[in-house]
Length: 294
Image (cartoon, rainbow, N blue to C red; front, top):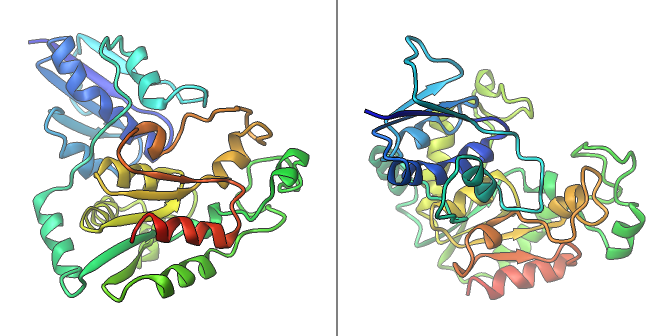
């Protein structure tokens, strides 16, 4: 028996990116037992539901075996190459592929269908989209006027975009068959909101969010964990890129890149996902969403 352990680091999305390794490790390296050690609780059930992964551990492993190979994945720093490809190269995968896939357990899927049963067509929307949406112009980006301190704060933008008005406008322009359903990253029970950003750390909450997204016809949000999750679930994803460019674009406050290799459109080419220009006006954001749904 050949055994291997994949140990994740970074954000929730990085754990999801690491799922691109599972089938390839088993196929190319003839691994018979593949375990994952993850450091964030939210995607635990989704990782455990991957048919190529034998055991999933959170934070530590009791009775740890002597694995033949351990891959402790590095923190993704470069935005010049797709994160899934970076992980695959690190693990010596030969057949590189940017895509990765997520599925939800049947009981969560059934529950999500029950919740949405009274609606004809559902469009799911990222609940904290407003924290990652900035109404900026290209000149302001070049001048770095969109960030007051030149650091990583989510709430330091000079002029946050009004995502509430965007969602209202989209809803008003959709046919009556459509229903907007907000996917909130917070739990109704504050004791579960232990994530450093104040989000829920409850794996069941995160899994149900994934199940509801899976049963929608489209997902709207900002480039990041939930939009990458929706794309991995096979759902058409339309997303803004202003936050990503604010952080990592040619004039980014965290790092600089002229061609950021992030987001569903990059990870899942030719799958119909839509990246909205970082400098789109509010009306242009609405127009892009409507034209790609109806």
